[in-house]
Image (cartoon, rainbow, N blue to C red; front, side, top):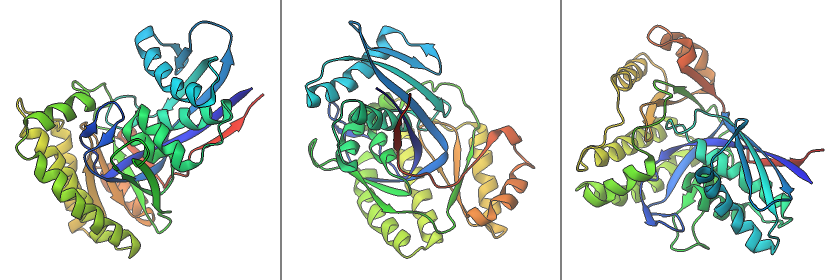
Length: 323
């Protein structure tokens, strides 16, 4: 048997930044994201004879260190199914890896839904979300399309994501890829340093409770302006915690600032556009699908065409058997 899955990346509007439990990847606060159709991972899995799992990423055989992380994740499915066969994993990222564009989210979500079929576990999407979380926290959200909330919970059973809304009401996102090289400091390392040293961190997690409540209300009412304002502010609060860490962590690059100023100007010009940033220099623009053509026209005055990724809303993760 061989299975092929597809899962889309997601961009958090209310950020996940920090773990309550490192081993189980239980977050410090609830988060909420939008799943994107343009950024995704496709993964093939099959049982193999051998003593070790084999992992290819974008047709490149991965070393023991990278394969070990995948093997530990597969172990969760082996234990659940009582089937300890080794697995061949071939994963293809249609996302710049480790550049602040959530490749780990789509990657582990795709792997989770593929392994669910391979090991014949018949896990539902809530359970799959819990499993995906163990690979990468934000992967819990990529099981679902649309707007998705990851409820932090307090243990392995209560920390999972669920769909909030299909986001089928003229919602889209533009990604400005300002730097697609690997980050100097990983999200995992930056999170840990922020929690340990930032005097602003508690304010971020405390205020995120109200942000989640308010953005869900805005989504329910399809209040794009309110949703965008909350998302924008939440992202800047997260980056404020990093800037106030010791030593300071800064993902902003000169082009990041230039992009933010451009978005503010577009808003003054009448476009429904709001920015957000994750742990990386790239800027994501929450916008109206109906305005994309005109927004991109304006962006091209300041940025190259190959820096602009247009994305509609992504669907739930999916899987099929292949011959």
